[in-house]
Image (cartoon, rainbow, N blue to C red; front, side, top):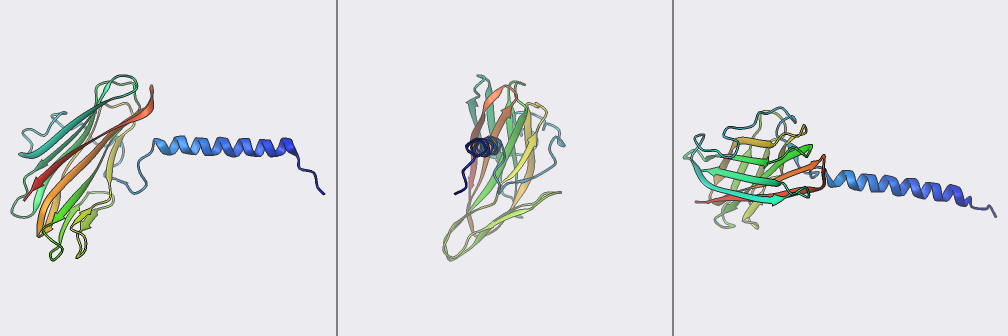
Length: 204
């Protein structure tokens, strides 16, 4: 019977353990797999004003939520949603704001949810982007709510803001539209990734 080389086996186990641990730590700091970028990282300027959409479009619904990072600084998630016009379009803005520079990455990640009046009718919501993947969600005869896959915009150079402004297109017999935004920051002096969610809803 061939003897097992104990030292070699332990080395293999150690290497595998290190690799798995590294992958787990790496995955914890990444955007979810089903999310796609809305724009190339670091390519967009901070939106003005940095903390709101005032003067840009009339806000119908808004939400702002905060959380403390493990370095005791404040991360804010903002979501603004404008009124749906006669063409079924509604402006929105999402942002992540951080009041320090002890991080490396900051990201805003969002999705749209549409609700239909009933299962006998359908409703859909779409978000289109100049570059990247467009996303759409449509209700069915069995489900009255549908949610798009997620989009995100990320800055990677310790910027204090990551924000995106565009519009959603709504069709069908809809009951409500909800924008959900997850703001996150990590890296640098921040050991544990910080995230906070804000949400804005307009009912028809």
